[in-house]
Amino acid sequence: MALCGLPEFTLLLLPLLARLSAGDCPCSEAALCQPIRHRPDFEVFVFDVGQKTWKSYDWSQITTVAAFGKYDPELMCYAHSKGARVVLKGDISLKNIIDPTFRASWIAQKVDLAKAQYMDGINIDIEQEVNCSSPEYEALTALVKETTESFQREIEGSQVTFDVAWSPKRIDKRCYNYTGIADACDFLFVMSYDEQSQIWSECIAAANAPYNQTLTGYIDYIKMGISPKKLVMGVPWYGYDYICLNLSKDPAGRFHQVWYDNPQSISLKAAYVKNYGLRGIGMWNANCLDYSDDALAREQTQEMWGALKPRL
Ligand SMILES: *[C@@H]1O[C@H](CO)[C@@H](O)[C@H](O)[C@H]1NC(C)=O
Ligand SMILES: *[C@@H]1O[C@H](CO)[C@@H](O)[C@H](O)[C@H]1NC(C)=O
Ligand SMILES: *[C@@H]1O[C@H](CO)[C@@H](O)[C@H](O)[C@H]1NC(C)=O
Ligand SMILES: *[C@@H]1O[C@H](CO)[C@@H](O)[C@H](O)[C@H]1NC(C)=O
Image 1 (tube, helix red, strand yellow):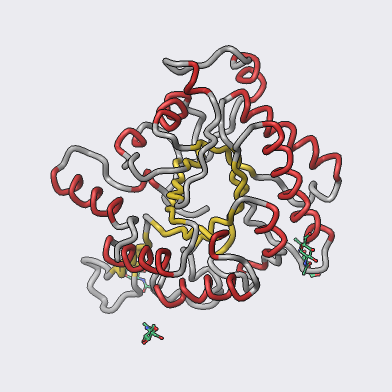
Image 2: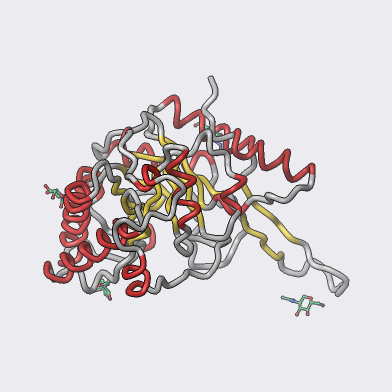
């Protein structure tokens, strides 16, 4: 998805599936292995990339955790105790999805994995180039539709979501059927960050997720006919450190320009989410904050979580 993450982990699928057969609930109470059925009006959709910082998250807000790190049964049990869903990461090479049989087996494998891990759905994170008149264009919409059908049939109350770029206007050569995909799943997670990704010429320092540009993305999605209730705003909890070109011959140091979102900028975006009736808010990624015991870090971390709450 973006910087500030850990290398992706590969699940050792087969041994894990064998170990976690039904009746092998890792939680203190068997009820915590039940899928979450409640559908909140407002989503706080959190990406977690692993390790144990989740213990310091603001669980009073979280509704869904997209578990992009190594599977952590303790996280699953804890999230369920707070009424929050835990969903798988879904990624697949688009070359393969034209074949309906391949799609079906991929989906079946994901459903089995979610069941074995007592999870509540899947977040499909493709982020690959698609040409508009290619077979992949239609196959991608079909993949999302079939994934939703299977998950909803096999895991009661499960959630299927799809990650899209900050704007529907062919970002990174992605020509997707956005309205078709939005109709086919619970909601889109809009990655309103890395908004400078279209700059191929000289690298000029700029904001990762400028407010006005962020808003134009939502305006465009809604103009296409996608309901605001199908859109969750993703905000960056990371930034960029640009090293400037040398301004002098002095070798003692370099100028830097650093761009990141803070509680003030996130609050403005959260207000938009509220005022325009979007489905919710979320971030890439929750692990990025400093969860240490340092007093200042604690205060700032609390402010970042607090900024997600729509005011007004
Ligand atoms: C899209 O089309 C262009 C031009 O025909 C081609 O070079 C490119 O490889 C295609 N991309 C994909 C993902 O099929
Ligand atoms: C998008 O997908 C929907 C549902 O499959 C379909 O009805 C619609 O024609 C598609 N739109 C485009 C522009 O391909
Ligand atoms: C953002 O949009 C507002 C309203 O259109 C405008 O007044 C403001 O100048 C814009 N800000 C930037 C930095 O472009
Ligand atoms: C900038 O200055 C450093 C230190 O003197 C030097 O190593 C580097 O090559 C310079 N870079 C440019 C783009 O001039």
